[in-house]
Image 1 (tube, rainbow, N blue to C red):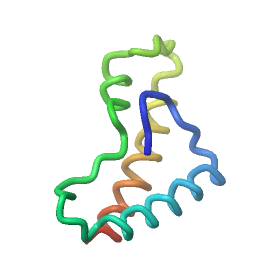
Image 2: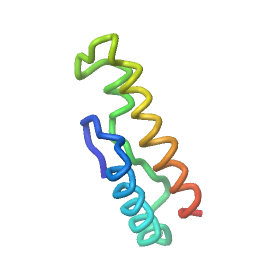
Image 3: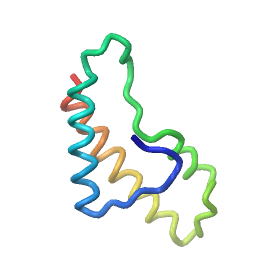
Image 4: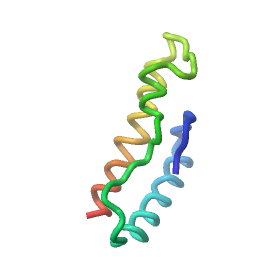
Length: 83
């Protein structure tokens, strides 16, 4: 669902992501080839190694947005719906 880019965390975007995560997990969770879920495709590495040359003063904002999107929303939904 996500590739090497930073994503917004405004409410309307998060709501759209949440809907898509629920739909995709429900659709795919019983497929025999699904052994793990991954939703951030290198974005954590991009932040950790500064692929995007984010100014130091802005890094906390990007890290907060990462946690909001991937941990607080996507991970929580996958745990809730995908079991």
